[in-house]
Amino acid sequence: MRIAIIGIGQSLRGDDAAGLTAVRQWQEKFPETASRPEVRVEASELPGLALINLIADFDVAILVDAVQSNAAPGTIHRIGEKDLSAFSSDAKSAHGWGVAETLTLSRQLNQKLPAIRIIGIEAAQMVMGAGMSEAIEEAIPLACEAIEQEIKSLL
Image 1 (cartoon, helix red, strand yellow):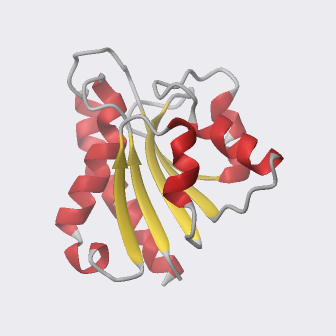
Image 2 (image 1 turned 45 degrees about the vertical axis):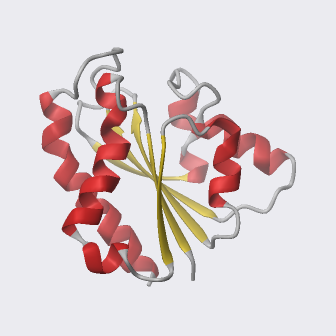
């Protein structure tokens, strides 16, 4: 089984850096898992439609990204692809063409995609030039644990 772990976000846009930060810290905290031959780790600041190429040829893609819903900042969401639409109707992506839109389009075009699992970190703010908020900083270790649990459930 080939697994892609992809941190998504913009490092200079406040809490939007959560996905990038969580994946980087997960690699540091769980080097044995991160270095397994069946696991590939990527970071993408503006994936847009290029996300499809990043996840091609994998059995499962675990996407780690900041999300905005009505939950408290720092909440960790474990979302399947079918649940992603709940985050796309009113949410505005900082990535241009967002993850939900990209996956929906790809499915509508009958492209073969891997199973998708999403670890969403509830953002408080995505202000250009701001650092991550305290709630997000505190949630990053929980997101690392969620990444590890997802991978362990697959291997």
